[in-house]
Every structure is written in C-alpha cells, then in structure tokens.
Image (tube, rainbow, N blue to C red; front, side, top):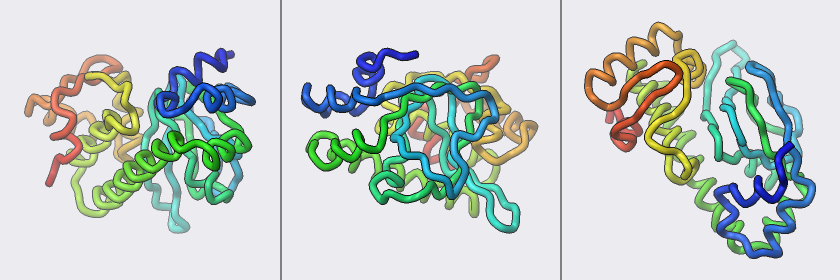
Length: 224
C-alpha cells in the first residue's frame, strides 16, 4: 500500500494546497490495483472517488448503441481524473479500463468536495485541468471524424506529454504498440506503420516497450 503522505505530496495539485488542506487530502486516501484489461468503472456506474494513476495506464472510452467504440483519453502515471462527475455528483458517462496493470490513488468524494468548497488553490488547479481536458476531448472528436490513422497516433502520443495534465512526463514514455492501438482505436499493424512513418520524420524513436518523443508540440498538432 502507498503511504498517504507520499501519494499526496507527489500529486500535481499538492503545490496549490496549504498544509491544513494537504492534511485533509490525505484523509481516507486509498490505493487499488487493477489487472490489464480490467474495468475500473462501467459507464452509468458511480465511482465516488477522485482518482490518480500511480503506475499504469487508464483508458477513458465509451461504446455507442451501434457498437462504435470511441476513446476520449489515456491517463498515465501522475494524471488525475473524474473531477467533473464528482462536482456534478453523477454516475460516470464513460468506461474506465486499465490498459496495463495499474495502481490508483483514490480520494473519497467527501475529501474532494471539502477541498472544492474550501480551497482556492485546489479550485485553481481544477479550472486548469478541466479546461485542458475539454480541449483534449474536443480534439479527440475532431480526430475521430476527420483525421487519418497517422495523425490519430501522433496526437494521442502528443496528449500523453501534455504539460498541464501530466507535468511529470519526460521525453519518453513506456507504452507498447498494443497499448497505443487501444488508445487510438486502431489495429496494431496500423499503429506500427504510423510509428514507422513518424520515426522517419524524426518526430520520435520507437524502442521495445518505449517511445521517445522529440517534438511533443508538433505531434499534438499533427495534421493541422
């Protein structure tokens, strides 16, 4: 199990909180582990925790009534998600799936709501997070309807290096082509071809289980 103090201190939002607020954030914080492919939450279910990825990768997605799958985002280590559903106090409007073995830090809704109602710093963080996440979701809809496979792969990689959502992201990420295919809603062979082309353009380098990115901003805007 994680030490609550370590988990909170490592969180991206911790710098915005006072000592008293940090202590409140630690209360009730728990850790849960999920196997690869496991559902963390199904669409329509409640998940009364604000959730951060300690290790692993989470896919936020949905499936339409016609069977069309759509991935909204991938959340890697250091990312937190679910604040919208907690603020509105509603069931989740998407599925949460562990793309690989994943450990989550989970803050109960009581602690989250107290911070939301009492901490100016916490709300500053939430405004930035929600604004950036909205931009990500809009871009995802655009790429699903307009962009080709290579552009979708590039932009999904670019988002995993987003400095607001994942400020701890460095120049490389541990992700397999299978995992990137799940996030991009493409087949593995298609992702492999796209990565080869992006590598030829000197935007990234593909290694076993790892991708080094040389120009995150260009990837995030690829296809414009």
